[in-house]
Amino acid sequence: MVDINSCPKCKLRMMLITVLKVLLLATGIRGAEVWHTGLVGAWYHGDDLTRIGTCMRIMDLDQIWDANRGRGNNWSAQWVGFITAPADGLVTFFGESNKEFILIIDGEKLLHVTGSKGQAQGSVSFVKGQKYPIHVKYLQHVGGTGHFEVMWSWAGRQRRAISKNALTFSRSQAEFWNYVEEPNADDFDFSTLRSVPVENYFAYREPGRFGGWPANNGAWIWGNEILVGFHQGYHDPNPSGGHAILSDRPQANVLARSLDGGKTWKVEDPDNFAEDDGLEKKDCPGVNFAHPEFAMRVDGNQFFVSTDKGWHWRGPYRFKGLPFDDDDLTSRTDYLVQGPLECLVFLSAETGLVQSNYQDRCFCAKTTDGGRTFKFLGWMTHDTEVRSVMPSTVYVGDMHLVSVMRRKHEQRFGDRPSITRNWIEAAESKDDGKTWKSLGKVAETDLGERNGNPPALVKLPDERLCVAYGYRAYPFGIRIKISDDNGINWCEEIVLRSDGATWDLGYPRMVVRPDGRVVTIYYYTTKEVPAQHIGVTIWNPDQVGREAERERK
Image (cartoon, rainbow, N blue to C red; front, side, top):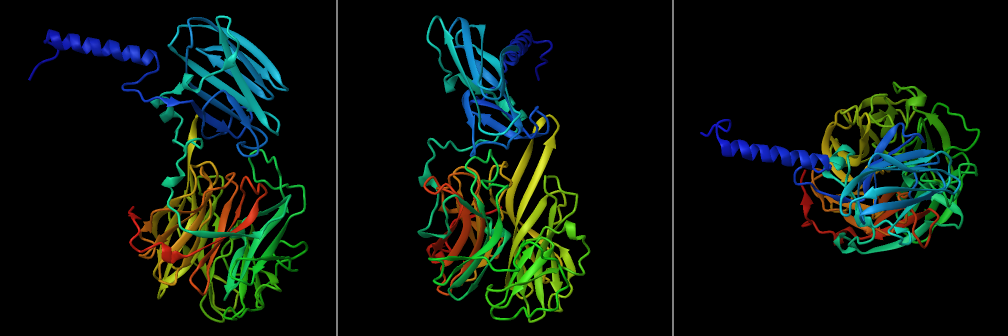
């Protein structure tokens, strides 16, 4: 064995390696550095770079935040990286913004624009081809569309846009800011998406109006008669990053009904339905769950029932007997009828233990007296720091339940962006809802920034399971997966639609027609129909064979 301390060649080699490392670190380069185009950083919930959110990347210094790209009315962001000098000598930067904007290069503040179409310029001396640290700050103190633009000029040339290739960030910066690669919309290859033939229809579409969130309401089927609930309001063409609904205009929960298996629909607004004004909760006098025209709609801490296919509703009734305060319950509609007086309900409650901006946790409860009282059976998830909400559940055997749930986990790292993950997870119970076991992740619903999407689950005529969900990252749309082993494994993701205009879509409900066709119902927006509407996709599960490739966990 050679002693490197006594070997002159070894000592020289180590000295050269040390010098090389110092030079690399001085320029911000680490090892065999991997460079990404653009700048990397994070956005903040506060308009003063406080309450850090998730990672945010920009590709150039010409940015605009409108209804599709914003983060709300008041927020801020900062990005770092390197800018490659275009020439030797003095380079002048010109900045413009209608909000507050700061540009720092090589530690020197060159531009500071304070808004209201403000402009500024500054110069710095460069060496052509060398990378210089760059730091950009954007602070949106008031709502509405915001933008900034930076151009440069040198050697008497006219000012021009800064080339995208001039902006880069390093692997170490990507790791610090928890960067995740996103698809490039400009060159996305849609042929890589697996699809199935579909027919698309509208359950609700009205110019200037907003239709949304079927998953918050429910869907029911009697033969070819289908009923779905949704939220109705007025479309906001500039929501500054939020949902595209005007909060200061009237809103209502309504229903749409189809008598031909989902092709044509008519909107209904029955009395005594969810969130109608002046309705007070009361004890349920008893319900016949086995009635052939029965429907139940769960809304947080209350439920409504109908025994005439949703034409008339009774309620709201309280979930009497559960060990939670009314304000803790955050439930939506998911139930399985077991008999005239017996019904399993799959609910959620805030626990205060979850590491995210929402505190829900799913549980199963049961009534054996027609809804007069309910008994808590068991929690459906066991990692209490991870949100679980909006389950969708089916029977796959005697006392054997499979449920899919919306999940969210937000890990915080002080001055680094939080890592937010949103996914769908499956769980099973083999004792009729008392104890539950996780079957693992089914699918991702976005890249972390859009709060995820709830699933809809059905059992197909051939006993396979199918889950549908909205996908809130590019390309926006509606997706499904199929399992032929009761939720243990799922096929490759299948895209029903990929033409969504924004992230503000999804929340599906799903039913199976008597002919075996699946009707998937969701809210949606496209370039052609920009106002959110209730879309319907009808497709044949027989066209997704059992030999489909499966992704094992």
